[in-house]
Length: 374
Image 1 (cartoon, one colour):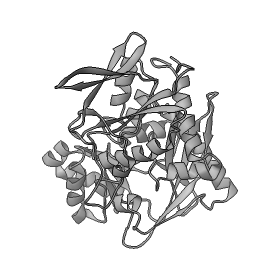
Image 2 (cartoon, one colour; image 1 turned 180 degrees about the vertical axis):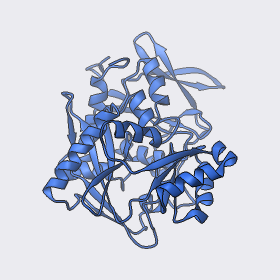
Image 3 (cartoon, one colour; image 1 turned 90 degrees about the vertical axis):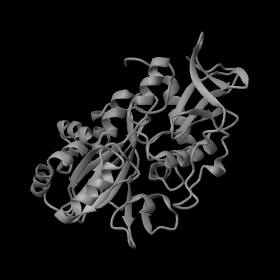
Image 4 (cartoon, helix red, strand yellow; image 1 turned 120 degrees about the vertical axis):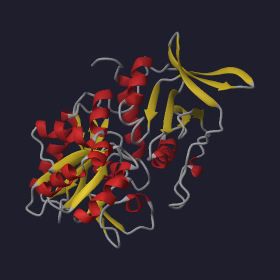
């Protein structure tokens, strides 16, 4: 399906969602909505409320901003509900209101899914779009699912020969039944340890356990967001550096100049506040200061990680540059943030691809790619 030549490309920007990253998804959507050229695109903002309802959002980017930690943006669940329905020519959006007949908004050429976390970034939405036959931006079902689950992502990356930090995984059920076994595995890894929701993001629910006495609280905090938790060796003394990956229109892969994050002040690691609140003390080097050999190796590993998970469209690969100069892949994000503070667009801007051109590239890739097995 190609967009008709006599009309603008209709893009449904889908954001919000049921995960703990709902607010970050809203902020990301605000930035993308501003970047989509109104002369080229007809944009339909679709919000997914925290209870799972799909609604036709206003597209007011001012309300899709973080004002303070206590005032985070969210989808307005009281707006008109919308559904994705099959049509004779493809798939379109239908607005439903109890007081009026259903109203068709027309076919959708491409969906730009900006959901972070489970029920959106994990292959669930991608599977629904595949079944509906709708083109969409970003990774497919498998890459989305594997990359969302940090435990399985590590398995896949390690199997492809990529370096990862030692870790173990537990569940809320195991912790309840056999704390001794979990503690023994943690002792074997050695403290300090990072405790992370296995299928979360934006540093929500992450804590650093400096010793056995802090493990229980760290686990309980992570279990509030995910019954499955990753426990990982802390990369002490490492530099945190990220690299962007993009597909080209001819099917190749290119990588951005990397960028470094340096957390200062009271933050021991790159937590939610340091990532998203402007007043927080975080220093960014875009591009990162690296020697030529490390730079080349990092870009090579980024492309390898992207291919290892079966990535499509885009990804951000996060690294630890260890004190001995070695590189370790921390994780791969198939839908990195597009907020004004996000590293992914900054890295591509430093590489020579402006924000608007980056968004255009992603939409063009999605339009070019078919749905189904490929």
